[in-house]
Each structure stands twice: as C-alpha cells, then as structure tokens.
Length: 114
Image (cartoon, rainbow, N blue to C red; front, side, top):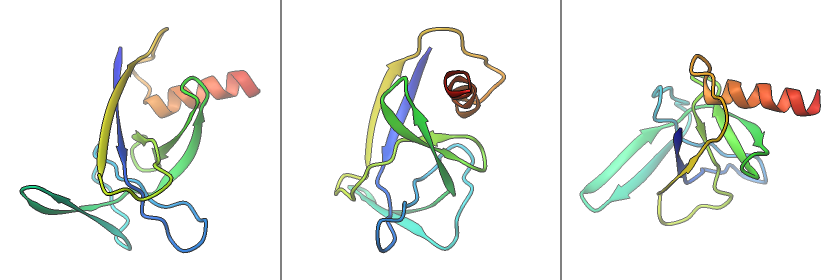
C-alpha cells in the first residue's frame, strides 16, 4: 500500500508553542488562524485543523493527526517559502482498512509501549 504524505508549512504562534498544520481530508477549520499560500496562478487562503502530536516510530518522524477526521500531516519545524512538499512511501505488513492510519498507529504504539 502506498501512502502519500504531504508536508505543509506550519504557522507557529509566539514562543515555542506548536503551530497548526492543514488538513485536506475533512476541511475542518480553526477559524482563529488561516494560512495564505501564494501560487503562480494567484493567492489561495486555506483554513486549518486542530492537531495533536503522534510519534511514528516506523518512519522516525513526528506525525500530527487531525482531531476532527484522523487525517495526518508531518510538521515542518520552521516556516519556509515553499508551502507544499510531497513524498510517498510504502507500508509493509497488514493494514486494517476499517481504521484510519492514525488509529492504526495508535494501536501499534500501544503494543510497543504497553
């Protein structure tokens, strides 16, 4: 199974508090903040989800999962001029198609850490 991972620029509040990432799965919105991304064909404003942090040991990275729909994104630690970078990877082993990826990873972490 191939999973497409899209990395979005984070909006980080003052200090070292975590920022917000975008979710394209459910279009849920935190109306207090928006990200404005400029493309060659104009400017697009995208609303944002509320996220929680989840450690993905399989990929050696931190994933943020959307609390509304379970969609996930990897955070970028600093704001960069390029708003979107995409990549993909293959997942080995059994994947329960009735569970979201976030739920599947939560189960895997519970098995590892008890």
